[in-house]
Structures are given as C-alpha cells and as structure tokens.
Image (cartoon, rainbow over all chains, first blue to last red; front, top):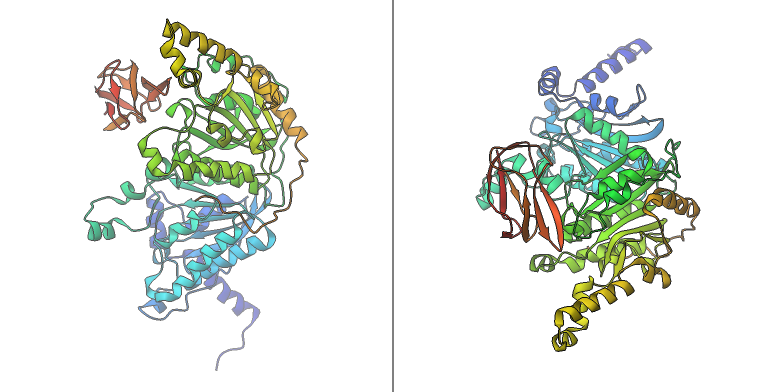
Length: 520
Length: 70
C-alpha cells in the first residue's frame, strides 16, 4: 500500500523531477558541451531573457514511447525547453532544443511542446524565438513524431505576418529541423557551429557519390553568401543571443502594433555636407551606399540583414526620428547596383515583412537596371523581378523613395516610384530618371540620322547633349509630377524625417482578399 | 587559399595589389569596369597575395579568378 502523500513528499518528488529535467541528457553530456564552448538549452534561454524573467512551461512532459529502448532513454522535458519571459521588458515566447537529449530529435512530445508554445505566442500575439539544435525527427517513435513536426510547420505558417518569428540555428540541424526555421522571418547562424541541410553528407554520398563535409554543404558561409537562408551570422553563442535581442528591439509585438519609438538623441534636422563628397557626381564612379544610409539615419546605426548575399541590394532596419524604418538601397559598389534574381528575392521578402509589421519603407535608389545576361534571363529574372514589383505594389505602409543618381528603366518601378504608389518621391539634383541611359537612347532613336550625318560623331554628341539637358535630370520628372521634390543632398535626413512625420497616420485599408498570388 | 573572382564580366581598370602584399578582408584589391562603372573588387579574407591573374585592360568573365590570397 502506498503512503499517503504529504506536502513534503509532493515537493520532494517535484524537486527530483525538475532536477532530472534540468540535467537533460545528464551531467556528462552537459560537461562535454561546455568543453566544446557550447551552452545548454536553459543556459541559452536565461541569456536570451531579462534576468530571472523566463518561465518554463511543460517541463515535466516526457516521451510516451516505449519501443526501441525509449523507456530507458526518455527524460522529462523530452529534449526541448519552452516558455515565456521578457526581453527589454517586452513579453516574448521561446523554445530551445536540447541536443543532449537524444540529439535534440523531434519526438512526439518534443514536437507537441513546440506547437504548444507557438499556440501561446499566437494567442497573446507576442514574438516567438526558436533556438534550434536538432538532428531531425526521432526515429525511435516512428511516424508518430511527424505529427509534431507538421504541427510546427502549420503554426509557423499561421503565425507568419501575425507575430515576428526569429530562429537561431545553434548546432547542426537536418531534415525537418530546418524547414521550421525556413518558414520564419529571420534566421541567425553561428560561425563554424551551426549547419542547415535537408540531406546530410552521408545520404548525398550514397545517392550521388558526391563527397562533401557538413560545413561545406550547409555551414554559415554557404547560407549567408550563396543561399540567402541565414540573415545574420554570429561569431559565438553569446553574440547570437545578443543579435536576437537587438533585432527584436526594432520590431513590434505583432501586426496590430507599431514598433516601439525610442527617444531620438540625434538632431532630426541635422544637415550633412559630406553626402556630396560621398556620392560622386561622375556616374562612372561607384561608392558604398551603406555609408550614405549611415550618414542619414539616427546616430549612424544601421542593422543590416543578409549583408553578404545578393550584395547589389542592401536591406535592414534603422531608426529615423526614433521610429523604426526599413531600408532598401541599391549598392553601386556591387554589380553596379543592378537588380538580379537573388537581390529581387532578398528585397521582396523584406518589403513584405515591413508591410506586415507596420514598418515604413525608405528606398535609396541608384540603379542602372536589371542585370543583363543569358544566365539571369534563364534563371527567371522576369519571375523573380516581379516579386519586387508585387511587394511594393501591395505594401500600404508609408513608402518613401529617394533617387540619388540613376533611376533607369524597369528597375525604377522595382524600387517603387510614383506609379507604384510611392507616398513621397524625392530626388537629388544630380539624379537622372530616364528609361535608358542617354548614349543608348540616342543611338536607338537617331540610328538612321547618325549614319546619314556629315559628321556622325558630332551629330551623336549634339543629340546626347540635347537629350541629357531635356531628360537626364530630375527636373523633367518634377515638371511631370513624377518627382514630388528635388532636395539638396545635405538636407536628405531632414526631408526624409519630415515626410515620415507627415505619413505617420497614413490610413491603411483592411485587406479585401484572402491573399494575392505573388510570383514565387 | 581564397580566390577573389570577378562578380560580372568587365574590364580590369586598375590593380591595387601585387604578389606578397598583405591584405585585409574587405580591402580593395582591384577595380573592375563594367556596366559603365568602376567598381572595387575586395579581398574576401585576410592574408598574403599569392598571385594576381590579370593585368590592366584585360577583359574578364564573371567567375574568373583574378587574385589568389593565401
């Protein structure tokens, strides 16, 4: 006959279960991780949240499986810690997979726990952070495990555009463990520590015969430079956690709120004469658009995303007048700032995030067009380029465009112009808003006349000068109301802030359809 | 060993390093003229220049190895 439980015996049993849960895969496994310079799931969560604010949920949930030795292997918590807490005083939900328990594999309860915390985050509309460290589905549990996995994907999708979702890849993640983060808004990886692959080197070797290491296949270098899957790369775990906190500071809790406005310690009407030196009036010379952005925004702080992927376009968050702003800028230093397949994808998804979460967009334009070439055409530049048009056309947040130098051809629309529903279209006096660059345009328009002229070169030059004077400037566009104001470069900051202030209460219509059908 | 490649077809406008030079990640190693523009091509790692595989005015293709850093 069992003894009657007392408060004391109940507490003792609780303590022992909690202790087991917190030990995860055991002290040996924890020591091994620490030896590798890695933290445990709970250490990561404590670092992520404000001190002592993290509240763990379903800590005692454990695998119900009994086959293949699971009864001996199971641990309270089932290899994932879930809960909520506060980051900079704001409510945030999170889960952290624990690789010391069965490799962080997604078992039935493990998956259900993650689904549980996703449901809570959606219920109260607060951001969700996922710290992934999982080898994939738990094979011991057979097809049962797939329920939790599918539930994660389903909820990631349901939460998209409702609450911000940030994923950090804390270790090697494979198979199902990478598609959940892939459905979220932002992914952060750790140099040399995290990898993301669908099929690992072993399977690849057996199927295609290719020899490749896990790092070569899905390390942070691959995903930050080639696939564009990793928005940011941290040097170590601490930097990764800090980056998540920093990123969150720019974002609202959900789609019904605006980002928190911070006190602006930078003069909103500050003028900057160095902008004219930074941006050469000679269009043959390039420059780093990042430096222009940093000179214009509050305190020079620009939180760039995907800095090493599709480098001809720059995206990121910043603040102006203390308010979060999304920046999209062409980068003349790379591919002359041309739009291509990857840069279109990069910008379009960022524009849609900003639109979903009430973040105004400012576009710094210096674009010669779409990147020409057989490869780009065959890679589908039409389909990919259309994403930018769609994203800007669809966006109802304040949209402000500044033409610095080149606004050429079809790329003009892709960077949001008057016809695309821009709210304020500004231009510097050296900007050229044209369909084609002058030489090409003159050669096409006057092909016959140039050939027939007594002095073809002199005639061509005469036409170039005439065309330039008439069209290759912002004044022609301003006379047609295709530019709202031509502004002095030194006044860029104050003019953008005035436009932002004016647009603060821009009325945004309720969506009238389920969703459009963006070219994907 | 790290290869610095041409991001797009163009003409070598200027070469700023020679074999044996120490370079830093992000440092301009040469200038490429393409799309009617002069653009910096930068080192992708810290190291020593092992070889420069092009000369001024060379026409290069996207993907061509221009500089090798060790």
